[in-house]
Image (tube, rainbow, N blue to C red; front, side):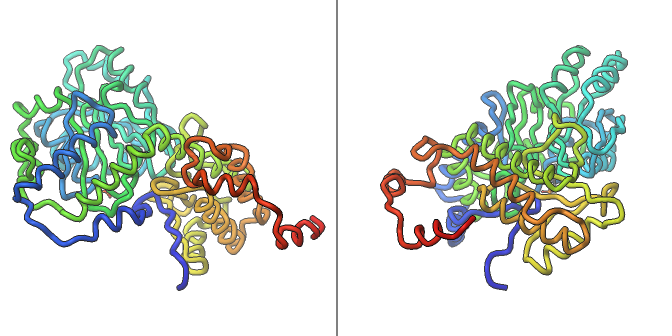
Length: 424
Ligand SMILES: *Cc1c(COP(=O)(O)O)cnc(C)c1O
């Protein structure tokens, strides 16, 4: 099929050309004398993305799931209790991982569409006067429902209960896209992977651990081999890895960090918020609702859009793929068929997202959802127009000063005049 596949699942995300080029290189000796430069720079700059001075970052040839395991096995012993709200497929799988590792999970069942409940967490911890609960497991951005939880509020809840439990945060679809403050929020294990905000293929597990969490290695009795942070710390200290790293992915991560830090993390967060807000305007214009039950939980990286009763969300996704070469995210498990998801994270701008919104409108109409053609696209486009940086403003890096002066001084062309003559 000519043209690009429109990839709008919430991971893997689009890999920008700069990262693709950075990864396109021959293999090299990962034990050479220059290799540590690459390792050290990456581990240093990751700390900036996690926003931690005191914590330590690690990179594994793995995925986000492997980092759940890494966080747990390096800090806990079989039979330890942990507390975890379940409000979507990823919080469910995080809990499942803990259970299969032999931990006892106190599950706080929470309606899908809501975020982590700080009050119930505080109560559960306050009731645990013997401090048997060793950790609190939270998915920061529940990718299945498009819900972002308030991690600072969870930290406040833990502190209000004066409880020593560690705070484990799955930030797989958050870190590098949504504001994330490892040190300020007192996060002990911050978990992510390469294929979402980092704009890379899947294949790297990325994690940062607090000093407190790393100290638990002394007493943690869960079996660990591949994911043992002890081996990683020892090898990383000299700039190497305990086993063969994925060299293309490390060069890709180098480019990804350069891109994120050049744009500036605050600008990256603001871009994601603005893109997401346009998508939400479109959903409202379609007369549809999000799975997120309150605006405070709206995710800036993925919107889960409920389809009307009698419609199967999977049909929207299937038609979008087969007729329009666009990939949308499916409803998972409890919300299968009830929604479709638009991922809006990573290497993305307004017009790319407008294309996805147009495709979603077409696919929805094809399966019988009576949205007004152009309504969502129009609402989002007007929002983007009204919030676009002024020409010449800092941050509008896509337009060079040279191009801007050409625009400012442009004379109407013949084509412009012809257009102006056409009645609106
Ligand atoms: C994608 C995702 C994961 C799973 O990560 P893998 O890299 O597929 O193992 C975990 N948690 C969240 C919130 C995710 O979005």
